[in-house]
Image (cartoon, rainbow, N blue to C red):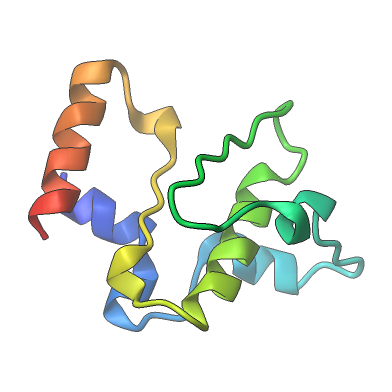
Length: 101
């Protein structure tokens, strides 16, 4: 599970490469979802990004992470695609592994 977590968070190891952002950078038309600029990043805020498939949620989150990395420690930013989580028990174990880093 640790390898999968680290694969989802390449900025922890100073890796600039991210599949989603690499793909976005090669597009002829690049857009940033409006919510990326409007989302609250104040402490204790909780934000949910929901929407249809293939509308830019992951891209928006990765662009937001890129912006957050300019002011925060990489280890404080945790991303994981929940498509890989079959149930709440696996989510709990995943968060426990992250917190143990």
